[in-house]
Length: 195
Image (cartoon, rainbow, N blue to C red):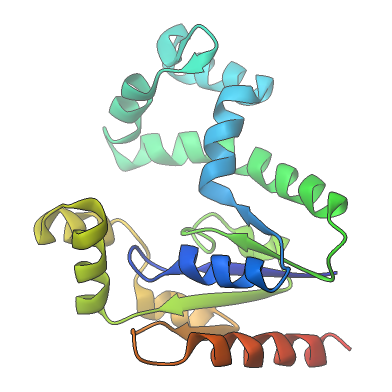
Protein backbone atom coordinates (compact mmCIF):
# COMPACT_ATOMS: atom_id res chain seq x y z
CA UNK A 1 0.00 0.00 0.00
CA UNK A 2 1.23 3.49 -0.91
CA UNK A 3 0.45 6.32 1.52
CA UNK A 4 0.46 9.89 0.24
CA UNK A 5 0.21 13.04 2.35
CA UNK A 6 -1.69 15.99 0.90
CA UNK A 7 -0.91 19.42 2.31
CA UNK A 8 -1.20 23.08 1.35
CA UNK A 9 -2.09 26.41 2.85
CA UNK A 10 -5.51 27.84 3.46
CA UNK A 11 -7.37 28.28 0.17
CA UNK A 12 -4.98 26.10 -1.82
CA UNK A 13 -7.68 23.52 -2.62
CA UNK A 14 -6.49 20.51 -0.59
CA UNK A 15 -10.02 19.36 0.11
CA UNK A 16 -10.98 19.55 -3.57
CA UNK A 17 -7.89 17.56 -4.58
CA UNK A 18 -8.83 14.95 -1.98
CA UNK A 19 -12.34 14.75 -3.46
CA UNK A 20 -10.77 14.07 -6.86
CA UNK A 21 -8.60 11.34 -5.30
CA UNK A 22 -11.66 9.76 -3.70
CA UNK A 23 -13.38 9.76 -7.10
CA UNK A 24 -10.40 7.68 -8.27
CA UNK A 25 -11.03 5.14 -5.49
CA UNK A 26 -8.36 6.44 -3.10
CA UNK A 27 -9.56 6.59 0.53
CA UNK A 28 -8.66 9.84 2.33
CA UNK A 29 -8.00 10.35 6.05
CA UNK A 30 -8.80 13.98 6.96
CA UNK A 31 -6.54 14.88 9.89
CA UNK A 32 -8.50 17.95 11.03
CA UNK A 33 -11.80 16.06 11.16
CA UNK A 34 -10.24 13.08 12.89
CA UNK A 35 -8.40 15.27 15.41
CA UNK A 36 -11.72 16.90 16.37
CA UNK A 37 -13.33 13.47 16.74
CA UNK A 38 -10.43 12.12 18.78
CA UNK A 39 -10.41 15.15 21.10
CA UNK A 40 -13.92 14.09 22.10
CA UNK A 41 -13.59 10.29 21.95
CA UNK A 42 -10.04 9.52 23.09
CA UNK A 43 -9.75 8.90 26.86
CA UNK A 44 -5.99 9.59 26.64
CA UNK A 45 -6.52 13.01 25.05
CA UNK A 46 -9.30 13.84 27.50
CA UNK A 47 -7.14 12.97 30.48
CA UNK A 48 -4.17 15.00 29.24
CA UNK A 49 -6.27 18.04 28.28
CA UNK A 50 -7.95 18.05 31.69
CA UNK A 51 -4.54 17.89 33.38
CA UNK A 52 -3.30 20.74 31.19
CA UNK A 53 -6.32 23.06 31.15
CA UNK A 54 -8.59 21.81 33.91
CA UNK A 55 -11.81 19.83 34.04
CA UNK A 56 -13.71 22.60 32.25
CA UNK A 57 -11.89 21.54 29.05
CA UNK A 58 -14.94 19.28 28.65
CA UNK A 59 -18.61 19.96 29.17
CA UNK A 60 -19.88 16.52 30.06
CA UNK A 61 -19.00 14.22 27.17
CA UNK A 62 -18.21 17.02 24.71
CA UNK A 63 -15.18 19.20 24.20
CA UNK A 64 -15.65 22.71 25.59
CA UNK A 65 -14.54 24.50 22.44
CA UNK A 66 -14.53 28.08 23.83
CA UNK A 67 -12.30 27.03 26.75
CA UNK A 68 -9.96 25.09 24.43
CA UNK A 69 -9.84 28.01 21.95
CA UNK A 70 -9.03 30.55 24.68
CA UNK A 71 -6.16 28.39 25.89
CA UNK A 72 -4.97 27.48 22.40
CA UNK A 73 -4.78 31.03 21.09
CA UNK A 74 -3.41 32.63 24.27
CA UNK A 75 0.13 32.03 23.07
CA UNK A 76 2.17 29.82 20.77
CA UNK A 77 3.47 27.64 23.61
CA UNK A 78 -0.11 26.66 24.50
CA UNK A 79 -0.73 25.49 20.94
CA UNK A 80 2.48 23.44 21.12
CA UNK A 81 1.31 21.78 24.33
CA UNK A 82 -2.09 20.84 22.90
CA UNK A 83 -0.50 19.59 19.69
CA UNK A 84 1.91 17.40 21.69
CA UNK A 85 -1.14 15.71 23.21
CA UNK A 86 -3.30 15.40 20.08
CA UNK A 87 -0.82 14.74 17.25
CA UNK A 88 0.59 11.42 18.52
CA UNK A 89 -2.97 10.06 18.90
CA UNK A 90 -3.86 11.23 15.38
CA UNK A 91 -0.74 9.52 14.01
CA UNK A 92 -1.70 6.30 15.77
CA UNK A 93 -5.28 6.56 14.52
CA UNK A 94 -4.05 7.08 10.94
CA UNK A 95 -1.86 3.99 11.22
CA UNK A 96 -4.82 1.93 12.46
CA UNK A 97 -7.10 3.39 9.76
CA UNK A 98 -4.51 2.50 7.10
CA UNK A 99 -4.48 -1.12 8.24
CA UNK A 100 -8.25 -1.32 7.64
CA UNK A 101 -7.99 -0.08 4.04
CA UNK A 102 -7.81 -2.42 1.05
CA UNK A 103 -7.01 0.10 -1.69
CA UNK A 104 -3.46 0.08 -3.12
CA UNK A 105 -3.13 3.84 -2.45
CA UNK A 106 -4.45 5.86 0.49
CA UNK A 107 -4.13 9.55 1.29
CA UNK A 108 -3.88 11.70 4.37
CA UNK A 109 -4.99 15.34 4.21
CA UNK A 110 -3.27 17.67 6.67
CA UNK A 111 -2.81 21.43 6.49
CA UNK A 112 0.08 21.03 8.95
CA UNK A 113 1.67 17.89 7.53
CA UNK A 114 5.23 19.19 7.98
CA UNK A 115 4.59 21.28 11.08
CA UNK A 116 3.13 18.23 12.87
CA UNK A 117 5.83 15.87 11.55
CA UNK A 118 3.15 13.78 9.86
CA UNK A 119 5.40 13.38 6.81
CA UNK A 120 6.94 10.36 8.54
CA UNK A 121 3.56 8.57 8.37
CA UNK A 122 3.41 8.66 4.56
CA UNK A 123 5.55 7.49 1.63
CA UNK A 124 5.16 10.64 -0.49
CA UNK A 125 4.17 14.23 0.24
CA UNK A 126 2.17 16.42 -2.13
CA UNK A 127 1.86 20.19 -1.83
CA UNK A 128 -1.31 21.67 -3.33
CA UNK A 129 -0.13 25.09 -4.45
CA UNK A 130 -2.04 28.16 -5.56
CA UNK A 131 -0.95 31.79 -5.97
CA UNK A 132 -1.54 33.98 -2.91
CA UNK A 133 -4.15 36.22 -4.56
CA UNK A 134 -6.11 33.15 -5.72
CA UNK A 135 -6.03 31.64 -2.23
CA UNK A 136 -7.25 34.86 -0.62
CA UNK A 137 -10.14 35.20 -3.07
CA UNK A 138 -11.19 31.57 -2.52
CA UNK A 139 -11.26 31.98 1.25
CA UNK A 140 -13.16 35.28 1.06
CA UNK A 141 -15.85 33.54 -1.04
CA UNK A 142 -15.90 30.43 1.16
CA UNK A 143 -15.72 31.97 4.64
CA UNK A 144 -17.17 35.47 3.98
CA UNK A 145 -14.23 37.02 5.77
CA UNK A 146 -11.76 39.85 5.20
CA UNK A 147 -8.35 39.88 3.55
CA UNK A 148 -6.80 40.97 6.87
CA UNK A 149 -8.30 38.01 8.75
CA UNK A 150 -7.11 35.59 6.07
CA UNK A 151 -3.60 37.05 6.06
CA UNK A 152 -3.47 36.71 9.86
CA UNK A 153 -4.37 33.03 9.55
CA UNK A 154 -1.83 32.53 6.78
CA UNK A 155 0.88 34.13 8.93
CA UNK A 156 0.39 31.31 11.46
CA UNK A 157 1.05 28.63 8.84
CA UNK A 158 4.33 27.47 7.34
CA UNK A 159 5.33 29.51 4.31
CA UNK A 160 4.02 27.97 1.07
CA UNK A 161 7.42 28.08 -0.59
CA UNK A 162 8.89 26.19 2.35
CA UNK A 163 6.18 23.53 2.04
CA UNK A 164 6.75 23.36 -1.69
CA UNK A 165 10.49 22.82 -1.23
CA UNK A 166 9.90 20.03 1.28
CA UNK A 167 7.20 18.20 -0.70
CA UNK A 168 7.98 15.33 -3.06
CA UNK A 169 5.39 16.57 -5.58
CA UNK A 170 3.41 19.75 -6.28
CA UNK A 171 -0.08 20.06 -7.72
CA UNK A 172 -0.70 23.52 -9.19
CA UNK A 173 -4.28 24.55 -8.43
CA UNK A 174 -4.38 28.00 -9.99
CA UNK A 175 -7.82 27.64 -11.57
CA UNK A 176 -6.50 27.16 -15.11
CA UNK A 177 -4.04 24.24 -15.03
CA UNK A 178 -5.68 20.83 -15.62
CA UNK A 179 -5.98 19.12 -12.23
CA UNK A 180 -7.13 15.78 -13.58
CA UNK A 181 -4.08 15.47 -15.81
CA UNK A 182 -1.77 16.48 -12.94
CA UNK A 183 -3.33 13.88 -10.62
CA UNK A 184 -3.07 11.15 -13.24
CA UNK A 185 0.61 11.98 -13.76
CA UNK A 186 1.21 12.11 -10.01
CA UNK A 187 -0.36 8.71 -9.39
CA UNK A 188 1.50 7.19 -12.33
CA UNK A 189 4.85 8.52 -11.05
CA UNK A 190 4.15 7.29 -7.52
CA UNK A 191 3.27 3.82 -8.73
CA UNK A 192 6.37 3.68 -10.93
CA UNK A 193 8.57 4.84 -8.05
CA UNK A 194 7.05 2.24 -5.76
CA UNK A 195 7.91 -0.72 -8.03
